[in-house]
Amino acid sequence: MPLLPRIRRRPTTMPSSVDIEEVQAAIERAAEGGHEPPFLQLRIEMLRPALAHSARVEPHPPLIGRTTYEKVWAAINRRVRRVAKPAVVPVVEQQNELNARLLRSLDRLAAADARLHAAIVRLRAESRD
Image 1: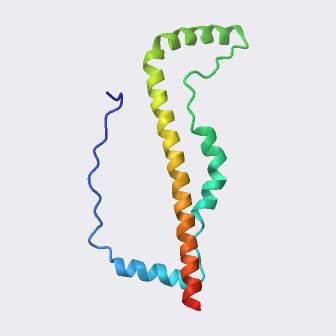
Image 2: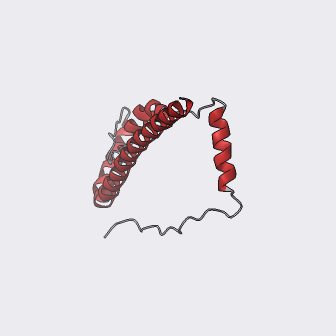
Image 3: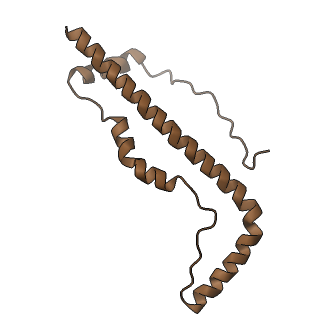
């Protein structure tokens, strides 16, 4: 049984006020003008080190006590951690698993975006010939 409740999502529906043909025409006009949207893959690659660094949650960061006051609080925190460990560790493991899945999804999204961009470039080259 998961510790966190499952979130039930409503099916997403497109608002009736959106005209798909108008949106498609706007996208094609932007593409014809030579304006390319920024590459998602490049943005993800720039953020990748920060994402990888922050993706792992540490259940017990080190407690450092330099002064006597800090050492007393570190000792208190060690005891509290010992008591809270059975509740904290499973939640941290779930969070780490979710973060890892999100990073893999971002990688797959970037790869799919690169494939789509390559297909667009190929189709544009074919249509000019």
